[in-house]
Every structure is written in structure tokens, then in C-alpha cells.
Length: 195
Image (tube, rainbow, N blue to C red; front, side):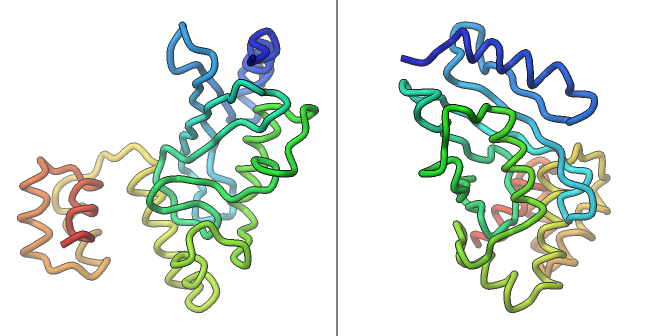
């Protein structure tokens, strides 16, 4: 059974120094402390800088003796994070977990992973190959995904069209796709990629 007293204490600890760390954890509902939503800022000096990343956290019945299940709810382009599901490849979320660790230390470790990818132990092989073989394209794509998915968008239509055309899509199909999804740049990107 989840130790909810400990979870309450951890939530207070996380949120107490939010102004300094930028890390926050809140329950997804008042009634369920086993399902949480974490927020971490993108680390400075990385293509994730300026982004705010949401992480879905599910506490198993064995928590804190079993690791929390974490996945990115915000899409992110990183070798150790699935670009499809948000699954995270990080040892402390698997076999290196210890009950001495907390939600905050786990989120700090996830944030550190954004700064120091491990392409030789990837969660997303396509991203890892790009990281290893075409680093400038990896950096550009990671920056673009941060802009598109981890920052509040206030772009006008022309800026959205320009961004998607710069990614290699034809302007006519970009305009019609953006129109078909009501101007939602993220949905348009998904539609264009699956076409």
C-alpha cells in the first residue's frame, strides 16, 4: 500500500522551493494521491531551455519500496525518452531505485538526463541515431520540439506556416493541414508527419 503520509510530505517538500528549483508536483485529483503531475523546467544551456515539461507520475502500491512510474506528458526529442509514448529510460526509475529517494530527487534526475543524454542506452533508437550521426539536426529538432510542445504558443498563422515549412513540409500542405486542425500547430505537425 502506498505510504500517503510520505507522499503528502514529499509534495510539500517539492512545492516549498518551487521558486528556486522550478520543480512542482501536484495530485491529478484531490481524491487520488497515487496519480500525480510533475513539472520540470528545461535545463539552461540545452535545447530544452525555456521549456516547461510535464511528467505523468503513477505511484505503485509498493511505493516507496518500488519506483514511481514516470513518463513525459510533454512531447520531447531526446535519446532516452520515447518520442511516441514519453517513456523514460533512467536507472533510478528501474533497478537502481531506493526508498531513500523521493519524487523530487527522481524529477531532478530526469531533469539532469535532459542535460546529459545517454545515446548508448536509448529509449528511442531513431533519436539516438540522429544524436550520434547528425548532432546539428538533433539539436535543431530538440529545440523545435521544445518550442512546439513545451512553451506556450502565441504564434500567428504565418509564423506557424514558416516553422513547419522550415521543417521540410510543402507550404500548400502546411496551410491546408493547419486549417483542417483549427490552427493547432502540434496537431498539424502530427498530421504532416503521419501523411
